[in-house]
Amino acid sequence: MPTADEIARIFRQESGRATATLIRTFGNIDVAEDAVQEAFVVALRTWPETGLPPNPGGWITTTARNREIDRLRRESTRDARQAEATAMATPADPIDDAGLPDDQLRLIFTCCHPALAPAARVALTLRLIGGLQTPEIARAFLVPEATMAQRLVRAKRKIAVNKIPYRVPVGSELLVRLRSVLAVVYLIYTEGHQASTGDALVRTDLCDEAIRLARLLVALLPDEPEALGLLALLLLTDARRATREDADGNLVLLADQDRERWDRAEIDEGHALVRRCLRRNQPGTYQVQAAIAAVHTDAPTAAATDWVQILALYGQLLSFSPTPVVQLNRAVALAEVAGPEEALAEVDLLDLPDYVPYHATRADLLRRLGRPHEAAEAYDAAIARSGPGPERRFLEGRRAEVRTTS
Image (cartoon, rainbow, N blue to C red):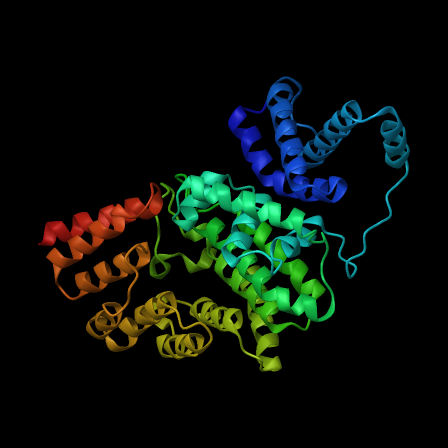
């Protein structure tokens, strides 16, 4: 029989789909969320006795829908109940959004409406699609939980007040909103690839969901290069998933990963998508990142990596996304081409005081330059800003090594 932890895991995997379906059914985000949460309570009470249903996700959706219908009938007038019963007995017309009847895709486009602030779009999608709880999203955004809770409430209220439609837009409106949608899918994968909470490095459910949504976007827009680029990037990154931790749950760096265990099917598909992007010759942020990932996965060994090409690609990426994070990643490639001293000079120009990879990169460059005292201080700064889990354990191990040599 399933344990409470197992039920919680299943609920987390399935709640996004259930919530999206019920938003379509009832037309209200809060109602859908409350109904799904109530279904979870019922599951916690009944599944340990009856066992898992054959289709847990379908069970959650059906139970939530039925309980909400019962509640609405109890609270409505007799005439309203009769009308509602008639409506419930009549099959709903199928919804057709460019041939892609996917409730979560509709919900992502709703969450990414221009009326919402960019940060609210991501936060709301992570809440409704990814199933993250408010404290987790707050940690991911580095803001207090109360601030994030208010942000989510305001975003849902704005959707209701502005009567933002629950659909995939068409024509020019779709293209305008696509950029936000791609960013949201990418950030869902990022949260799964390196979970901001918990002891696990990876949240498989979020990685898989982001890839599924990226595939839907490609099916919707097969000639959109950035949609192709995003899917390629996710596949080429995900291909290394099984090798990023050792048997004890410790972080394994890219250079030390067992490349024989990389997922060749994902790599081959990712490379094919990158080639499709190159033929279109309309480069963009995700396409260039996918090309960088393709160079990494094309190298049979870490020593064979074409760092000169990667450095050039990061230069191109800066033209599309001139951010300190991209500059930091470029500095990592620069260290392999020109050495750690030149790379450190670039890193020290950046302003990323709360970004763990910034301090970890400085620490590694200082370690390679034979400056253990400074490296230890940089590792301390990285550790102080990291949560529990494989990344923190790795940083603590490296700090111990440089303190031993100092």
